[in-house]
Every structure is written in structure tokens, then in C-alpha cells.
Image (cartoon, rainbow, N blue to C red; front, top):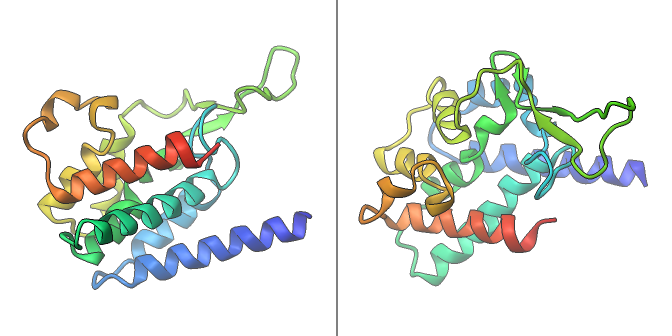
Length: 190
């Protein structure tokens, strides 16, 4: 069973890297930073959707799959490269930064790991909204378009820090990323 799980995780990682490299941009430095920063093994949340090792990788691929479906359903108004880049990098900041993970195991006073909330935010990492951290990390290595920056920064819509800034400024890329992320985190994923 462990071997099958490891194989699935390795296949997801290979798929992620292949998808990201399909961009016309040189992703090698970013992929190296993601490897070193623990992106491929990080949980997606502390206690909600995909709060498990490798959850962030799984979530990012799920968002890509649903973003592609939405883009196709709407007549492909957004370039495939922008769908790939924003879907795969929208939660990049959740891996952490400066050599520190964003999430660490939540250990109870008893010394046992919490089953209900397996991870907690790392208090050793200075707090920055993950949307902002995602942009900061990505743009150390690649150039994002203005529309891609906006989509990543505002992808949580009315559920995020920037809920009032997006109203009336929505773009097709933002809407596709937001709805794909929302659908995955609220419906598809445990």
C-alpha cells in the first residue's frame, strides 16, 4: 500500500513538472526552489482540504484539471499557458519561504500529533498572506503577465484578503482560477 501511494505521488510530481515545463518560460530555477522549499510534500491546509503530506501538489493539479474544463466550457477565452501557470502556482506560498515550511505538524500537549488538525501554521515564518507569498516566490524565477499576477493575488475572491479589490475588475483568467480553486477546495477534496 505504501509503495502504491509513493508511486502515485511520484506520478503527480512528474505530471506537475511536465505541465509547468510546457510553458515557454524557463521554469528550471522555480522548480528547483519548489523542490528545496518542500512544495511537493507540503500539505494544502492545516485542518481542511488535503491536510496531508503532498496535499498542495494534489490540489494544484486538481485546480489545473478543473480550470481547463472551465476554460473549454467557456470557449477557451484564456491562453493554455496562463491556465497552467496560474493553476499550478496559485498556492505556491503555502509551501513556506526562507527555508521554513508554512505548515508544521500540530503536536498536542500530550506529545501526540493532532488527528483533527494535523498541521498548524509555522510560527517561525513571518506571516504574509499566501497569495502575496505565491507571487513573491514565482517572480523571483519567472515573469508573470499582469493578468496572471492579478489572478493569483485575488484567486480567493470574496473568501480572501482582497475581497473588495476584485469587485468590478474580474477577468476571464481570474474567474476561471477562482471557480476552479473554490470547486476543488469545497467539493472535490477532503
